[in-house]
Structures are given as C-alpha cells and as structure tokens.
Amino acid sequence: MLYKTRGIVFKITDYSESSVVVQVFTETFGLQSYLINGIKRPKSKIRLNSLQPLHLLDMVVYHKTSGNIQRVSELRHQPVFLSIPYDIVKSSITMFLNEVLYKSLKQHEADEVLFEFLFHAIEILDSISNGLANFHLYFLLRLTRFLGFYPDMTLADTGTYFDLRDGGYTRMQPPHAQILEPQFAAVWTSILNSNFDDLDNLKISSSDRKFLLEKILDYYRNHIEGFGQIRSHEVLEEVLS
Picture: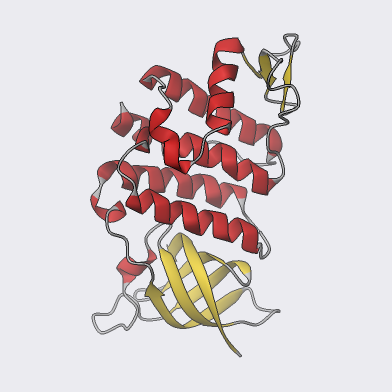
C-alpha cells in the first residue's frame, strides 16, 4: 500500500553505482530505511540534493511491516530551504545536530510529538538570523524532553550544582566529576528557561559555549547507551569561534 508521510533525512548510504539507501525519520512510521533506485542518473525524478542531512520531505512511500528496507514512490523537498544550504554557520549546525539525532534515535518508533518538534525546529533554523550561536545548545537540551531525560528542575532555584549523572540540581557538590559547577549550572538554567525566539538574549562567551556543549554531550552519554563520540562538533566550534 501507498502512504503519505512527512520525513526528515538522517543518513544516506551508497547502495550501488546509481542507487542509495536513505534513513529518514518519518512522521508516520518512525525511523525507516528507503531504497531509491537510479537517483544518481541524470533523468531521475528524485534529486540527490533533496537528501541532504535534515532536509524536510513530503513523501509517498510503500510500507511493509515485515520489511527492513522500504521503497519510495514520490519524494519532494518541502518546505524548500531558503538559507541552510547556503549559510556556513547553519549548515555546520545542521551537520552537527544530524549526527546527534542519528546516534540518539536509532530504532526509534513513530513519535508524532517528537517529529513535530524536530520539523518545527529545523524550519526555525532556516528562518532565523539572530541567536544562531546558541541554537544547538537550546535544541539539545530541549530534545531531552522527548528522549526521556529532561533535567529535573525541582531544585533549579536553590541548587547550585547540576548533576549530569542524576539529571537534577543539588545544593551540595556531588562526589564525582560529572557535574556543572555553580557558574555553569546558572547558564544551563538560563538555556533551559529560554525559547527559540530569545536565543540572542543569551550572552554566552565562545569558551563557555564550547565547555557547555561538551557537558551536554556528556549528559547524553550518561543517558543514552552506546551514544559514543560526536565528531562534527569540532567543525561547528571552529565555525562559531
């Protein structure tokens, strides 16, 4: 049967001389792998540049519950990006977020609320011109709400440390190194209390931003089994510095 669904491109892998397998996080079926035959040929109806990381898609697909690789009937880039492919900062943010999402959402089932957050956030990234340097920090902390380890804010007003292992604030320094000390816990709180509209109001130095990103990735490693190392953040930090 044919189904219509929106999708977000995660990863593309060569399958043959002219074909690819693309992993797409779909609104209807969750994370799926699609074989697209002949996409590298000049007369292909589906263009390879439609499958760049985090591109947003309208799709008509075949879906078999027993199949590991599905097939695409129709695919188009919708909405068409106005700035992400042409802006070095936005494209670097996209590359980095794509790597984090790919490591975080493996085998992920359909989740319309999560999908809507991702789709809307990517649309915002394409449209904004201010606050770009803080976008990835806010996005990653907000994403934890959908992944099941959003920080416990119970003691956010009185706790001076943030425990990256337990995921909450504490008044006493935890007996391990996986913490945010008071000055950084305060910035962490400010990010959590922000939204996409006021990211430009977060005054974070380049060095503090780099440190906080490392801690956010540590937080992910503490709560996602097999999360591993992220490599694209080094490119992002170079672009943002």
